[in-house]
Image (cartoon, rainbow, N blue to C red; front, side, top):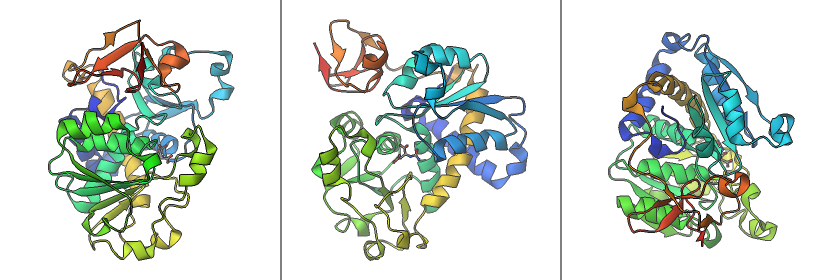
Length: 361
Ligand code: NCD
């Protein structure tokens, strides 16, 4: 059975099939309006959301299906201490597919181990956000006409921004991708992504400190919010919160054909004066999110019993009870998930659930 926990759970072909189906849905919405009749989606959101949860809801409704779930786990048995695995065991008795957002990294991967229905990761801590990635790929394709051979600048909180981590992973499979990382030292991209994704796949990347110096090169500028809720130190957040602001003056340095993306919500990083610029694609991106989720739900249910579309087999977890993941936000430390690791090509260990390099004996 296919779950979508990490963007790499889909092959490049499957990713392209979902993006193409979304384009087909956009071209002929009527054709798809009943294909999920009598099917149900659960949205289990342990963390705040506007776009992601409502776009899943609206996607399933537009396909003729039904939706149930919660947007505040405090009102559920979670407050009595129920584990994520038990919650999905229970909810899987009621629905055909589950979309889950959780503040704990690796929670969906752990839950998927016992789930009898496909689990879709709608964001786990600062780790991954694969459905935003599908949204971003569709948006890049619709704005530029292609995904290969682009220069993309990621700007803002590259440390905690899960949308950035997942999109870089997915882009590593396209041709001719140049990545420019625009962030202050405190918000730089985690090393595990640089080593395990960029270096491994030979992505051409460089790190810079200002938007201005790279703006004329960009096909895509991917702006992000500084993720206040992920900082352990409030003073550190205050120091970096307004690091970058996109305004009309900076937009004037950009190419005529380029697009500004942002997963939203924005705070101060894009001024409203930019919204009328035809290159500001972030509200079109929101709508693409609904279409791509319609395509994803359709494909996951189509692939559910097809052995050709299982989970990737290339990695097996390495159990090691003598070590532990030291990431306090990992499911291993929240719910006693087993101590599983994966080995990188260079022989280093990473946590199986959250990819952390911080492994203690
Ligand atoms: C993002 C998220 O939740 O990671 N939002 C979204 O899903 N569209 C980005 C953010 O919260 O800044």
